[in-house]
Amino acid sequence: MKDSTFDLYDWLMENVPGTKYNLSQSGMNQVDISTIGIKTNFAEFASANIDGERLFRRTVASLHSVEEKNVTSTIGGSQAIFIAASIMAMNHEKVSIPVPEYEPMFSVAEMVGLSINRIKTGDFPGKETSFMLSDPNNPCGVRYRREAIEQIAETVAENNTHALIDEAFMDFSYEKPQRIKVSKGAIFSNTLSKFYGLGFMRTGYVISDEETIARVNHLRSLFTGGSSSYILWIAAQILQKRDYFYGKAKKLVDVNRKIVADFADETGLVTEAGSGSAPYCLMRYKSKINSVDLCRRVLSKTGVLLSSGEYFGSERSFRLCFTLETERLTEAVELLTGFFKALS
Image (cartoon, rainbow, N blue to C red; front, side):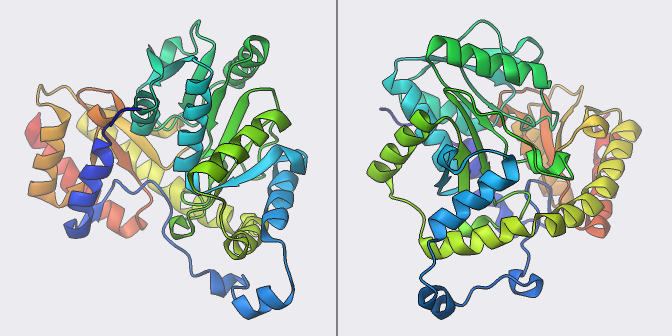
């Protein structure tokens, strides 16, 4: 194992506290769960002798039309990435990762000693037999064809290898939860941090075949242990209220997506925002300035926080998230429009 970097995290920790318009926040704003009927009283939980882990697994299984034995909880999405990469490393697998992609896919894989094959998203999945990816893609915001995901699942099952398919933003795509087809070695992960806006709970889950779930549970017990039964009790209730969260997210993101797409058209930026299914997009520009410097200049002149595409493996681009309240997003976009018109 060797040290690695997480430049996106460092950038956010450095700049989020003082920013005026945070267009690097990919998840929904936090909800006061007490206002939607979620029970949080610990005394009530303790007196009822509730098995929070079992309730959580049963709830996830019902949402995705799988069996309870195919589900386990994780401490957020980050733990799923680390455990999946560790399983692949122990199997001496070579992993294929699309470019651009969420930075920890690369950095965690490198940290645990995996050999990485970087493939352009248009050529993905390629000829490798192990995979790590986000679907919808982070930072582009576009989903993979269902046939590509099925091909990945078939490949890892045939070769006794593994794939991590991070679906942290998949819920933004569907009015009803997506049915997941369980396949040997395919690890589907999700988290309550993005769609539900509840990152403070540090709760997520993975769905896979029974053998892989057993390996995930074993490694989790060695690294961190599991989430508390109390937190999982609350998380299960939140998942049962998914319709509320979907309505809230759709109302905001649909309006904001058009604002962002119109901004790109007006400034000549190239993006797939209009056809995307996540609350963010990658925007490409023609100027020769590198994107880290560009984002620093944008922040200094406008107070708008963007994320450099270089953190995701994409030059001359930046990720723009649009989970901000519409009025505030409109203000930020007006400032960005002036900046990019002057830049060109």
